[in-house]
Length: 324
Image (cartoon, one colour):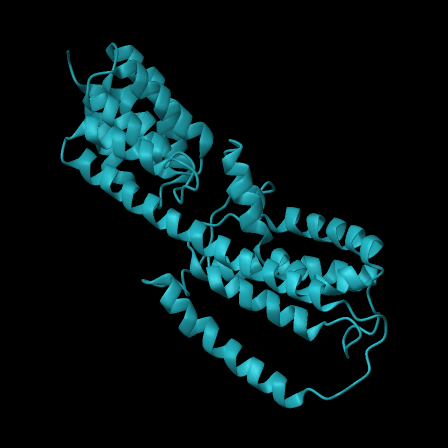
């Protein structure tokens, strides 16, 4: 996600639709006016806030729900109506701002990532371009988002005139409180992203340890990577755990984690592939065929375009045909 970029978008939106300005003639109550910029910045981050809170309380589909376009439309409309009642603003304008902020967040994420399912729960089809993927996200974002923001602020300074604003002006204390909230939101987002980066490195370490046959160490690294706020897709850590336990000979736990990974993220090719391989490798010949067949069929039906599809089917067929 563009961490700093979302904050810049929220601030620009707040400035362009400032209460009493050209695009928003209707004034707000003093407290709502002071919280105008924090409110728009908060809306710009809302999908990520929903995702992280959901993951923190154990809701496995939080990332899908937080970045769902249909749910974002509904949430934006409800937020706009409540916001208007509390602030005295226009329900139509505030609903449009809430919906627009949420959906623009989703658009930026689609441009940066390749693993989004924006139309969940209607469909879990994953799309994304990765166009804005940045090797060093914070410094890269300062270039991509910070420079246009600085130019915007310079242009805004030049165009500003002394114009009377309708409604009471908020006190300086409220103004500084609002600015403090914006800073807190930005610092919180940066801190969470930093921790997510550490978790990402731990997950990569877990997978390297798994490939090298260090199964116990891979389990430890996977447990560390799976703590909140984890950047991994749902089930990724459980796939590592399942393969590690299978490598250690603990088939009961391996099966449990494979199934949990599949239940957490059925759109993950490897969650389905590992179950197919696992069931094709354990039990009698009849059991291997019978238990692996549903997952083999699912691979054929849904993942035939995956570049590892044929290699996985070959391994499944060899395991299922093995004579004990």
